Length: 206
Image (cartoon, rainbow, N blue to C red; front, top):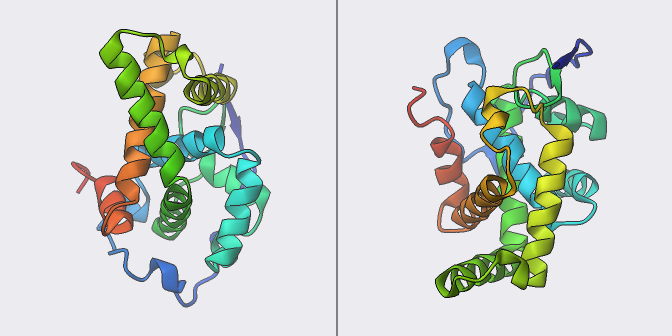
């Protein structure tokens, strides 16, 4: 059964938009809140990064500090709260995700993706080569480690009774999701990757 947490935090105070977010266009959103698909996608991308980067949540906060985003994301608890706006989560937050919060998460995802570009490329190439040879993904130690950690994170944090989670009921489907998220992380590293990723979150929503 899904458990809803009623604890909420007030939205970030009004003020100047952090410089790193200025190039992300405003999207006309119904009610001024990010849609379900965007909330899910942002959290899953962060989950993939956590599976690649030890100490993921602490590193994310360090990146938020480096990007001058702590006025938006504040602290570890606040980061957990906004990620828990993902309705796939076991512990869901009865709160929306504001466009400013979403932009901050996009900036962090893209910044960390660029730092992990070499690793992401290595894993995708390994997956392609193993698939071409008909060999199991477990044959590549680093890829197997990423996939195992992603599956563990996903299963521990997502509600298995949610329809959006049920479709990932076996290892093969979770592995496919983990690899697709790697491709999306690589997408974030390209030219204008931050802007393209931001806009992609709302395809079909506006």
